[in-house]
Picture (cartoon, helix red, strand yellow):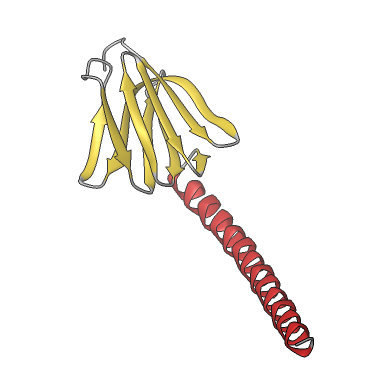
Length: 138
């Protein structure tokens, strides 16, 4: 790999997950995976959930699990914006971390769905009571 580098920045809604110089980035779009090198032409790609791989300045491969997102290559900058991301060292550790976070997200979503169902049921009961009260006044 040449001495040229790019600045890879991975952004999630609440933080900058990753911001370092890298020599290459491998990402996955709907039509397959692709590699970005420093001299590649500028472009934009919609990313699918998967593993973003990169080689850092020491030529060590790193991994970031990402949700749907967008990759923008502009000059020596590569920006990735995604809703969720998890950085990991070894691919096995990353898989374990992602599994744990997905289980936690699933539980949070289950709790939220239950609370929403209770709110909807309460609103319907209140609406019915209001209808019955209005009918009784006629």
